[in-house]
Length: 200
Image (cartoon, rainbow, N blue to C red; front, side, top):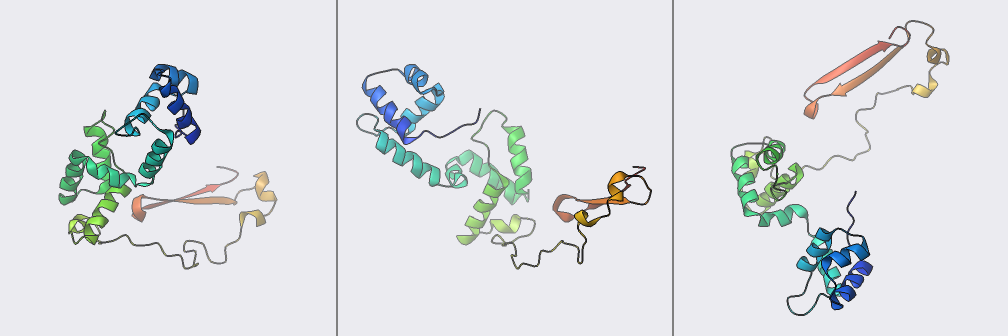
């Protein structure tokens, strides 16, 4: 079942049910939410002084959601040290992400995407750091993709498949070919296939 964030209305209900002294289990039953969701909500978004307050809780949750996840993970010092150590050993972010899953299979805190690692490295470069030199391409910042309208990759003067003769769809003659291409990782290899429509 997919997860959905608590709404302001649900937090309003939680506020009133906690005022009546109902247990987490009873709040869970009435809202049809998991017990972990309700207990986490009360733990994370309760004010330091006084009871749980729905408006305050909602503001805290929205502020936390707006903060980038890769930035929040900087607080996990063990994860940060692991990533930085392996970046300095010239491991790629993709390999680091995969190794984290194998080395810490039951620890969700020891997870970060390759994109998150790249943001750490580029952030370090903006602060004058040299982590980017341990990357394969050694760029101090992310290179933006070109959007010049050239549509690189399209075949010049191509003829669309909708314009092929109707007899080709009947597969009654040899010599009508279908071709396709497959590109390997990062464009380092490629594969072309050519199949006759009738004989296969």
